[in-house]
Length: 242
Image (cartoon, rainbow, N blue to C red; front, side, top):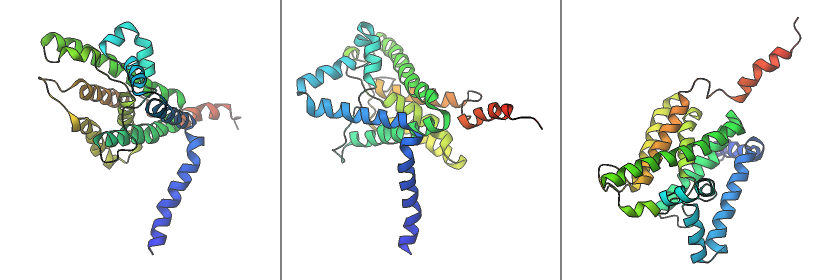
């Protein structure tokens, strides 16, 4: 009885794993790249050299002023988390951003909406959330709400893009699960929040902005229409008329 009850979900997972490379090849390639870059800075470089690399791709104010493109694009080649320290808060963040955000929901967006929109959602969310957060940081520094060290604080990784995808991935859920999921997407960044004034720390704020961007995309007419539905009228138009 137990074997029969487990065979359904297990076989479904195996089918999904076999279909993953075909349905989301771009996401799979990106996940492999992230794992390689993570292993490179963690095991292939000295601690000092790894810190220099991650410092260079951080999207803080100093880097956005001196080399904005390299910082914005280089930042999404790494994830700020751990795959080994399973008892840490960082591991939970890795599960949410890399596991759910990229491996699951980015793959779903690629399969349902197409590669171009998957790239646009992820990379657009990363860039837009980073730049909007930078604007808030500038204002907060002028008001004395953030310390001056924020200007050159390390801030790299996939989490803003993943957060945008997590919000867009609300479409993948049944209607009764969408509101609880949206609440989770908004709430989880507060797990490690630090308050130094009226605003949360800039990383928490950036995740909230990324979530708003993702939810805002859901309000765009036709955004959630699958590529199959988009292609159907075209193919139908080519059919000979009776």
